[in-house]
Image 1 (cartoon, rainbow, N blue to C red):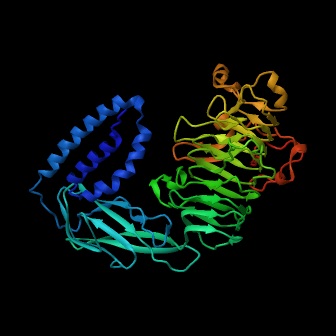
Image 2: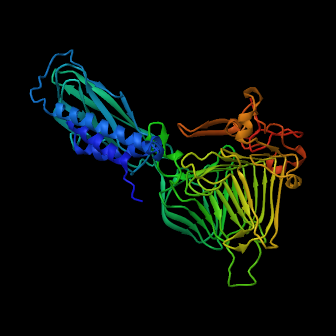
Image 3: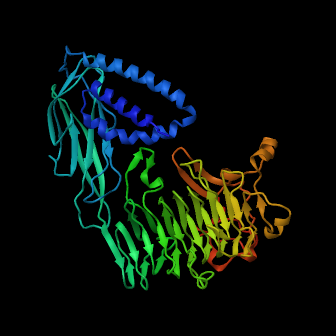
Length: 551
């Protein structure tokens, strides 16, 4: 069905008439339209489309009339009095940290004339004369100085600012400053401060690791066209490394990947955009900013320790399909595909963890907010200890579950020898966040076990034997039937912060969380003696999940 992009059209028309009314250039239209489309999509769904179109028509009519009135004012009077002040939307324009040699996003500054007569700016100029790297667009032109700029009475104009910072051979960001000076015809000069931090980076383009290599840089690495680890090679990433992947780039492993992060110096893998979509929303909080980590079937022995992997198309995926043409094709990997300890895999567009016909152990790890499933297990043997699997994905209501496990795919059996969760949390918005799918008319193994865990699901009496000492969150209907003071903490309220306005999350436990003291101290493996933040767990009844509650 053809869908007309009303939010986009609305934004264009609004900016068009706003541009006419303020005597700004088409540049305002082109540079600001893209910043509003996403917000309109968040605010207007197809359920209130009719109301939106009525609002759209009304606003267009008002804007059209106001634009005509504004454009017809050809007899503007101007004032040169020293008391005729202008004002700015902000006194300092600050940019987020910018990678050197890469242009910034465009910032918008509005200059207001609140007077009942027009004012003239004899000059608008950069204090540095343009040597700082800042660029200014005013009245449709980029320049370092503009003369004879007019602002009509009770009106405003837009100024657009960008910056590109030259490399400075430093591991730490450096501050670049400049001033935008506005001199009125009355001789009064006002200024707006410009600030940006520049970070030198290492750039890797289409790099393939063919022999054992260690990355231990003292500045971020920006990856273009993906980073590939060839068969037989081991890539070791040292503690404190930050890998920033360009759109579409990822980490593709045919050999072995060893990520040796620490509590004090974790390894970060993220997208390369450091700017914001909106003032409250950095691109780093959006999913789909880069691809993710792909472990190919021939890859084994991978290690992830203290890694923060977020905002990709996927997290860590390990497909391992059977060859339908080979009757001798093996059942599963004989050695572990990977071990994950003390990691965060968060906010991805599809699956955060995907394992097919392989072995893996996952300790003390947060796996959260996936457009697909937070965890998908297709056959094999996988164990989770003190993990928090939380499905509160905000970008699409049709997201997957917290956990899906199965012993088949595309009508092909993949024996599920064991999936086991111990002292863990599996929860999310839905009434049921745990799904198991068993192949009919097949003797392929389908074994699962959940121990001392908090789970958002419903089980039968026959299934209870596979869920010893587990606690289950009530369904929404059950909660609604309870008195308010009798309702247990559940779902999002288990945690300290689930904020879908600014998209910030803190999956540490709330004071009243029902995951507290749920774990079995005798089942704590050595890798989980301390929680993800380094807090020592008690030996008797630790909290379920990757975070031990603290004051």
